[in-house]
Each structure stands twice: as C-alpha cells, then as structure tokens.
Image (tube, rainbow, N blue to C red; front, side):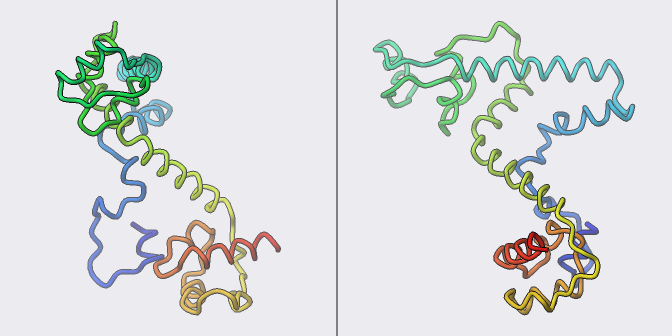
Length: 210
C-alpha cells in the first residue's frame, strides 16, 4: 500500500483491492500455507502439531505430483476406448498423468481412472491444489520468473545523489517522476506509474556503467 501511494499516487481514498496485488496467481488462498507456514514456524507462530500436519500434507502433495509426472497414458486400444466412453478425444502419443490433467475438461478424478488410484488417501484440499498447480503451471512459472526478475531489480540500488538530468535518453515524463519520487532501487523505479520498460532498461545500463 505504501509503495502504491509513493510510486503511483492516488486522487481518492486508497482501498486495498485484490486486483492491486502483485503476482495474484501466486497469492492464492489455497497455497497460503505453502507460502507462510514455514515462516510462521520459524518465528514461533505455528505449533509443532500444526507443523507436523503441514509437513504431512506437503509430503502427500509432493508424492502425488511426482506420480502424476511419471505414470503415463499410452495410446493403446483399451485406453482409447475408455477415453471415448468418458467423452474425451483420442491421444496420439503417450501422456503423463500431469499432461492429461492440463486439458481444461479433465479433472483429477478422470486421471486416476487411467493411471490408478494413489496408495495414499489424498485429501480433497491436496487434490484441489494439485489441479491448480498443474492446470496453471505455465502461468505460475511465468509469475515466478517475474518475481525473480523483481528481486534482481530490488537488489540494484540507485545512488541517493542521482543526477536524473544526465539521463537525456529517457522519456521526459519518466525523468520528471524519477526526480519527484527519487526511487531507491530499480525495482521501485519500475513500479512508478507512467514509466515504461524502455526507461528502466536505459537506467539499468547507466547504473551498470557507473
């Protein structure tokens, strides 16, 4: 919120909206424990019992993800027949359970009809998490790449006495906003409203040459 008020400004009372959150695909309710439980345990907010429950869930999740990425549907006649009976099109090549689950019309329940049930009794919350992680794998990876990129930008500090007028190749609007806000890092500079990626690239090259 503070970063938004500094870098974007506001002409009305600020409201916390989920649409304003960065990397919304990663900040989901179903993976909140994956993101926060370890931190909570380190600072003493998560009990040993809660930690044991969480680790058991993650072990189950990881085992089933590994199984889905290993077990395959092969284009055998009996498999093609079962696919047709369930209303799915035939497959040309062997698919892992995970690849089959990426189809928008396919759910976990259909996948196990081909690769078999897990030896674990999979909790419903784990199944929902598996479906989300596999279905949106490409988008999640893209979001994680953006997070990593932002971490690199945040690590690049901008001198406090930066002479913005020396950057005569950036847009005038960007220079004016840099002067007004005086960002401390490339990451903060990239989040300023009205500043485009080209301006950040020029600033990055300038700082690397310093």
